[in-house]
Length: 295
Image 1 (cartoon, one colour):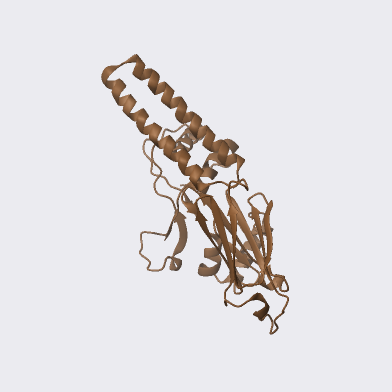
Image 2: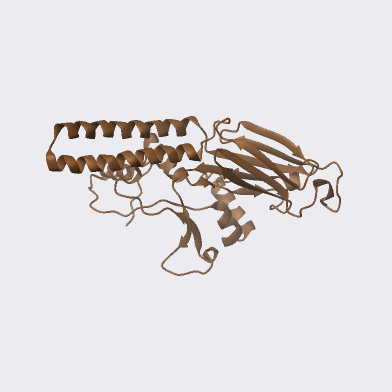
């Protein structure tokens, strides 16, 4: 029997879990993983994190809320996060027309709102199935390099659409942050073009800053563990003071990291198309900056 608890996570706790989905590393896998598939697309493709540790805030939040809702103590649990990419299901699992009809029925029933696609990291959507332009990115320190190019390696003016080419065609590239603010708007006449974006200047989350917070917090947690072991041995009041001081420092750093994440945006959206064939060449891709780089 399965019991479903509606609105299980209050807004504050939902925010914590959302940060987990944004920042934890996910690995490509499939369901049911009891059966081996040489190609995961032949199964039900999904993405999963590693098991969350007992001290992980996500696991702690779940246990506390579960206890509150059910009055049951969890003695032992193994948990992780899983997500499914709409684009993988759409392109690999189901016939596209059948899938679109399925999603449309869900919309009509008020179950989902997929007007613009409910996609996560690195998903691209294209008016032409991505046959003309492609987008990629590289993260170097605090600089995100966006590369837009034609798949045929031809200049925009040489690309044939519906049997015709247009000498005035250029590649238009528009870059926005996760809140929709436009950061770049440029035209290019070459087949491959690069745009460099300074993350700090544009209030975008920096991988280096996140890693810096994590390393400091990890170092102080290791120090705290040593202090606790020392206090167990000697019961020294000075050691106890150091323990409280270190706990406060860890809490302050975790708060600073959270404030930094809330103040800045983690996503960069790239929109590109040929200026004289926008409808048939428009391509979009969203990149997310995490401790692990760009996804």
